[in-house]
Structures are given as structure tokens and as C-alpha cells.
Image (cartoon, rainbow, N blue to C red):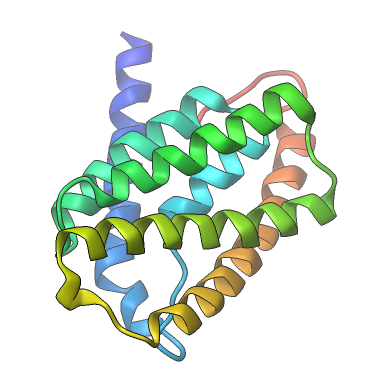
Length: 171
């Protein structure tokens, strides 16, 4: 019963973050770019080793974004899963918890890979969505996502060290 409540609360949190992502975050754009909260959550959870939660955020967050955003269904899910599995492999096979400088690199490169995948899937389905300015938006989005990931990584690391040394919570 407790696991069901935790799952429900996690799905509710993902839904609320997706609502914020599609309703508030686009109005905070600079040069046509804005942060992707679900992508940052997937990056953060996976980098900290919360693989089940990262998987859940990629799956449910991708589905909610595909439903709530005006894009072809599946673009967000596929792009988020690709990032999750790349990070999962790197984290499991190559790294432990990565040092801070790698978090910055993973945030920037992960955001670019996500945007390239999303752009590729969108362009394959509708060539009319192509915009030459999209590549500069990808760079700015990667910067925003990296800054948000750095901030989240510091806060989450502090919170984990302070409060989760004896027991673990799942987001």
C-alpha cells in the first residue's frame, strides 16, 4: 500500500512539473530557448544513481509532455529515454557518482543530445517545423539546462548528505 502511495505521489509530482514546463517555462524564454525541467530531473536522478526514479521520470514525464505539448506523440518519450539510457550506461559501467565538472559536461552534452534527437524526430515527421535558428536555441537551452542542473545538483547533494544518510527517499 505504501509503495502505491509513493508511486501515485511521484506521478502527481511529474504531472505538476510537466504542467509548469508547458505553461510557465515557455514564457521565461531568452532568445527562444528555455530550460527543460523533466530533462533536468532525469539527468539529476540518474547521475545520483536513482535509476528507477530516473526511468519513471523519463517514461511518465515524456508521456505527459507528449500529451500536454503540441508536438507529435513519442518525441519526448524517445528523446528522454535515449538520454536516460546513455547516462545509465555511463553511470553503471564507467563512473560512480560523477565529479562536479562532469555534471556540467553531462548537463550540457545531454541537453544537446536531447535537443538533436527531439529536433530530428520532429523534422522527420514534419519538415515544415525546421527553423535555421533552432541550432542557436539548442545551445542556449543546453546552457539553461546545465545551469539548472548545477543548481539542482548542489541542492540535492546537500539535501542527500544532510537528511538521507540513514534512510533514502524517492522523488
